[in-house]
Length: 341
Image (cartoon, rainbow, N blue to C red; front, top):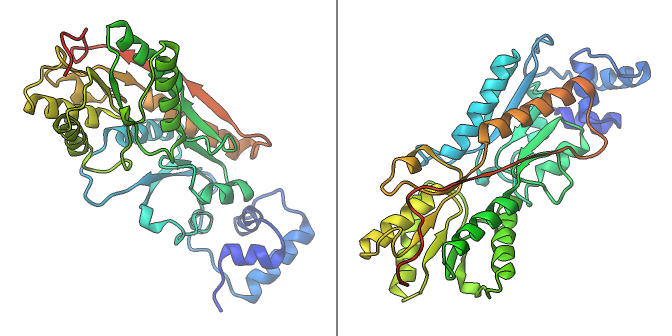
């Protein structure tokens, strides 16, 4: 009969982390507990999948993975920040590609333990990510990026509500009143915060926000440019009146610019368009894209630093939350409206 680290933990009545410490001959385990765990290890002839060099800390990044996605600015910037910290601190850093189809099928805690991973940074978590509770329960050092998991998780977040409110206020100050907001997946706390910032600014200005002004989309996919283009093309065909668009990411914003141009609408003369994330390609678009800049590399370096600290000092008793400021970048895609669409 083959067993896993988790099964050994259940039989011994201890945590997965304790079994891992016994397997790796780490201190901090009571002699009687170690004796019990080793009894089951020997009984089932369990051998770890990897032999770990304890001189090197291993941190993995859980990364969203779509086989048909050739590039992703947001994820790429985060991974670069993780790699920068790992290189500077002599850490062993790897990537665990995680597709939505794996949800409920992969035991993340077991994967990390059997591969001797000390801690993990999660780049694709949502409010429905089942494995966060497992990481918490087994005290595996972890940090999320741009997801709070209801305030119960260790995380690094941008002040998305504040930034989106300020960008909406900027557009309102330019004279815009009919603003479309392309929302994103509300399973992500960061998206909910952005939506709240938009609604707050509109309400403070005394402007009712019809439900149809907030456009959902199904999440982060490889076709976000086409998603933005098709969404706005449809709104134009329906005769929807708007003078500005706030998109959930730069790719959707650029697709929205394409849709407006194809319909013969001037950007920014007739429609101002704003993105999010401050991608490289938005800078060189014509017109250059106004956007909200998250310090993505800084955020992922913070996340890696916190995981590294937890590995050295122990799992925190209360959730760790780090916040950074997102910055408004005003370029050529926004202006005062000349006339309504």
